[in-house]
Picture 1: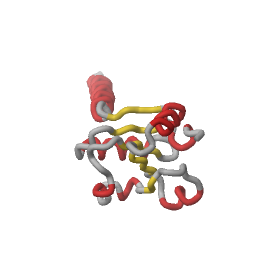
Picture 2: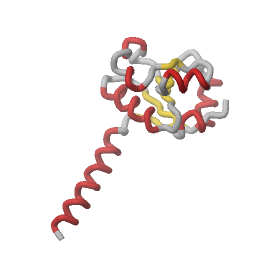
Picture 3: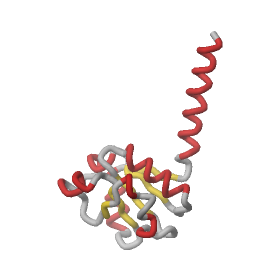
Picture 4: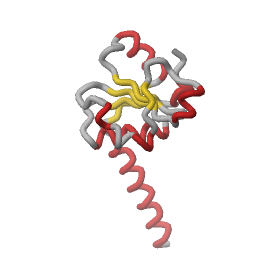
Length: 121
């Protein structure tokens, strides 16, 4: 009985942590990103955190490739006071990158929900 209660508490704490750790990250759909890009191309920093190989196969014009495993070492390439949109293949790596960017003080961090497949531009 106590094991079940401990597991339930652990799950609840994990879910609360996940929610708390993404509180400063805005999520956008592919359609919302298309609208953002058409209105303000110069003000947005666009980062694709997929591997170099994935990026070479197919990428969205304007997105700079900084693979997730290099994001911390290449922070100097991202301006902290400008909005940054992050994408990957499905949205899972980009949310990890967004968490890193948010933790180091990036002002406006935006994740493309659903990744490159969600973007039709």
